[in-house]
Image (cartoon, rainbow, N blue to C red; front, side, top):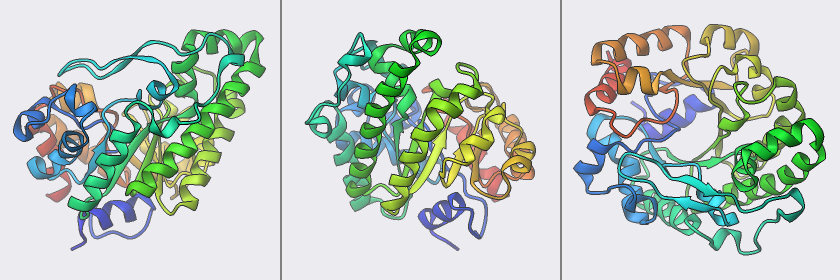
Length: 334
C-alpha cells in the first residue's frame, strides 16, 4: 500500500496508483474539525500552528488524504494592501476594499513575501512538512486574474475588458509575478502541491475568448514556474469549465480541479489522459446539504466517470458534517 502522500501525488501526475485517492485541493476548514482540534476561524487564518492543525485535521478525523492550507483566497490581496475582513467561524475572509483605483497605480510591494499573512502560511507549511510528511502538503493561492480583481476591483476588470484592455494586461503582469514568487516561496517552505484557484476566470464570469487571451498565458507562466521547482501544479476554476477545459489543459498544470457542472467523460474526451482530473462531488449541494448515501452515490459516479482524484468540487462549506466527508472517503475504499 502506498502512503497517502505518494498516492495523491502520483494520481495528480496521472501515474499508476494502487487505488484512487480521496483528497481535497480546496478549502477544508469545517466547524466540526475546528472543535475537535481546537483551531477555530478566524484565529486559524493567522496562527501558523492552528492553521496547520486544521489543515490536516480531516485526515485524522475521516481519512481524507490531504493537508491543505490556507482557508481563503485573500492572502496575496492582503499583501498588496487590500483591506480584509477575516470573517467568522462560518465565514471565510473577504476583501473589503481594493488596494488600487487604476492600473497605473498597481505595483508589487518590494517586501511582498513579508506582508500580511504570507509569513504565517509559510510557517504553517514548514510545520506540516516537519510533522505530517506522510500527507500531501497542498497550499492554495489565488490565481492572477482573481488576484487582479481583488486589488483593483472585479468591476474595473469587467469595464476594462470593453474599452481598456491594455490595463488588464498591465495588472496581470504584476499579479502573475506575485503568483510566481509566492508559489516558489511556499514550495521552498515544504509544499508538495500548489493549487492555483482562479474562480474569477470562470466562463460564468468571463468569455472563453478573453480567458484564452488574458488568463491562459499567465497561468502557463505560473504552471511552468511550479514545475521547475519540482512541485505538482493544480489549477482550479469554478463553474462550467468544459468550455475552456482544452485551454486549461494546455497551460501545463499537472491536474485540473473541476466542479460538478463539468462532465468528466466529455472533459477526458477533449483533453485525453492528462492532465489528471480532480473532483467533482458537489461541495454545497451534496457534501454540505446531502446525506451519506447521496455522497456515496455521487462519489461512485465520479469514480466510474474516470476522475483521477476523488475530491470535493470546490471548497467545503464550514458547517459540512464529518459523516458526509467520511462517506466520501469510504466510497473509494469499498
